[in-house]
Structures are given as structure tokens and as C-alpha cells.
Length: 120
Image (tube, rainbow, N blue to C red; front, side, top):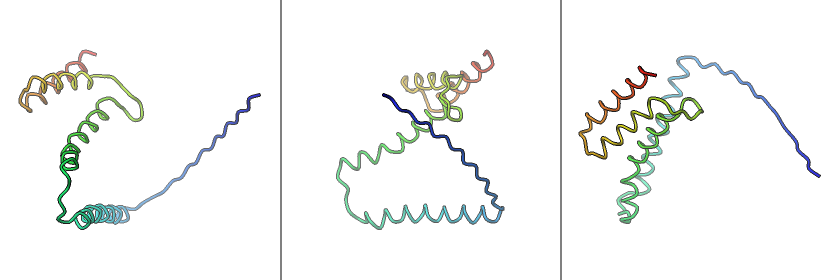
């Protein structure tokens, strides 16, 4: 015997924020982010991190950049999409693999993306 239940609920909320409230919110969130970063310096202080932790921390910016590029290249809204941007990323990967200068990597990816969009 199988039993199934479907629950459906829709919640709709509308909130209006004035320009002044928005700037106060931005300032408060900026202050909170700054305090979180400062707390890290206070907690860690002048302690020396183990070598493994230092190596891992050094890789974080590159991994975050790669994640942002992947997200922006292969998604639109909440849908995964393979379009002209994927061709540009592929050309950029090949150019980096061939050790091309950074400006050439960006220009080649941009040109291929524009060409694919023009043709298709």
C-alpha cells in the first residue's frame, strides 16, 4: 500500500523600502561585513597558521573566481544554458593552456563569443 501526499503553498510578500532606508541598510550591512573581517584578525592575531592551511587559503581567490566564471558562463537565471558564452570560455581555456598573455585570452574569448552570437 502506498500513500502519497502533496502539499502546495504559495507565499507572496511585498515590501517597500524608501531610498533613505535602502542606504541605511547598505551602510549597516557594510559595517557588519567589515566587523566580521576585523573579528578574524582579532581572533587569529599574530598566530602562525600551519603550512597546509596557508596553502589552502592561497587557493581560495582562484577557486572563487572559477566558480563565478562557471556560474555566469553556464546559467541564465536558475536554468543551465550552453550558448555562445560556452564557446568563449572554451577558447579562453585553450588560450590559457597555451600560456597566452591575459589580454589576448580576454580578447579571443570576447571575439569568439561575439562571432557565435552573430552567426547563431
